[in-house]
Amino acid sequence: MKVLVLGASGFIGFSAAQALSRAGHVVYGQTRSPEKAKRLAAEEIHPITCSANSTDWHHLIPTLDVIINTLGGEASYPDSVRALLNSVAEAAKTLRPPGSPKLSWIYTSGTWVHGFNGGELNSDTTPVDLSGSHSVELVKWRPACEQEVIKSEVLNGIVVRPSLLYGRSGSIIGLMFDRLKKTGKVTWPGKPKSGGGLQGGRLSLIHQDDLADFYVRAAEKAPLIGGLIFDVSNDVTESLDYFLQRMVDIAGVQGPYEYTEPQNVFELAISTEVLVKPYLARSVLGWQPKKLGLIDGLELYWKAYLASVE
Image 1 (cartoon, rainbow, N blue to C red):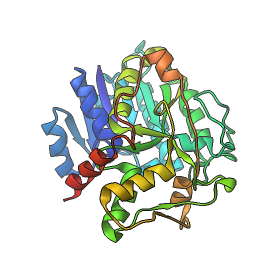
Image 2 (image 1 turned 90 degrees about the vertical axis):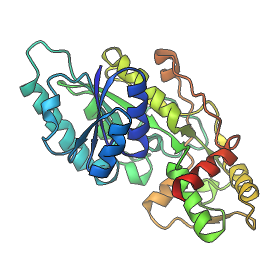
Image 3 (image 1 turned 180 degrees about the horizontal axis):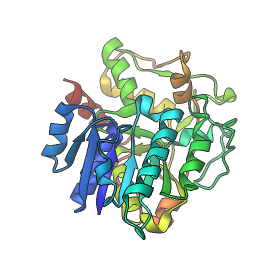
Image 4 (image 1 turned 120 degrees about the vertical axis):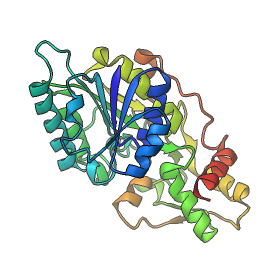
């Protein structure tokens, strides 16, 4: 296949692009950074240096099979998500030859759309209120955007919802590593579990590599799975308290670990317990996470983080 990864130098996009290349596909990686473009080229990924919202990469649209949107930051805000989706749909109508298969568009959302569910497990097909009233505040707009993707009349829309990411430089778990390295204390934004918070709660998680494997499988079977939404998470949830205590032990810092008051909507999202146990990727794509869980591999992941920042 010919696949374009938007946001290919990011935590999610880079590993996805690597995995697709190793699977034998022709991979293009969009990045805004000339320096990061060199890193992509070294991985046998064709670098496309431009803004994702520009038309500088649209010359690829006539022959692409799949586009994977892993963009973060401002490019992941609702107006940008919709503008990019509409721009690509219009370009596909104009640039692709008559009778072409639909161009597949894989949009990266997240399991925060489920919100707190009273400790109940969510699956891929658990209904999500399109108004976002039950979603985490930070992503209340996402359920509506997900529907626009899967109901596109021009593109073959697919949605992936990763849970909290870990591995290597750490992603969201890396934010805790950053605070630990800076302050010498193990902390986590948290509010009481009775209010939907994570104090004494559990984490739904996915390793960077296992998510990358999902993207490969989804891209390869994209013509068969259009219109589906996949939650992507490990088989079991993990205890936040046990994770934080294990971190104190591994880092050799003074305990106890501490919960801090969330200071913004992002920390509020991190502090919300969202429990998921997906089944679609396993039953439809034969996907199965293989990496060590966060707690079992924590010493390894902590060392990998330190190596990435030193």
